[in-house]
Image (cartoon, rainbow, N blue to C red; front, side):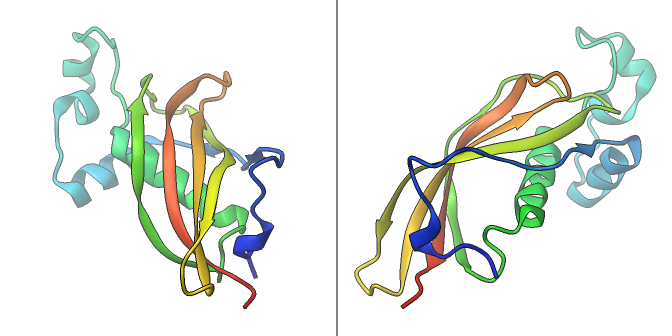
Length: 148
C-alpha cells in the first residue's frame, strides 16, 4: 500500500526514482499510438539536418514514462484516487534515444478535502537525464486517500 495523505510531508526529503532508458522502440511505439509521426522523432536522416542533429523523443512520451516511474516507486499505489492535473509544466531540454531518465519529486503542498476522506497533494516534479539535467518540470496534483 502506498502513502496516505497524512504521510506526504512538505518538509520531507525529495523522492528519487530508478532510471529508465528511452529507446528507439519506445519512440516508435509512441509515434504509432499517438499518431504523431513528426520526422523529428521518426526519421534519422531528416532529424540529422535539424538544429538537434538527431531524433528526439516526444516530450509527452518522456512525461508518460516519468508517470510510470512515479507509479513504480509505489508511494501512491492503492492510495491515489484521481490525477487532478498539471500546473506550470515546462519542457526544458530534449531527450534523445538512449538517454536515461529518472524522476525527482517533493511535496509542494497539500490540503485536506472537506469530506476528510481524501486530500489534494501537489508535488513538484523534475525529470532528470543521465547528467542530472532537468529536462521537464512542473506540478502534479493528485487526490489521495486519508487513513480515515
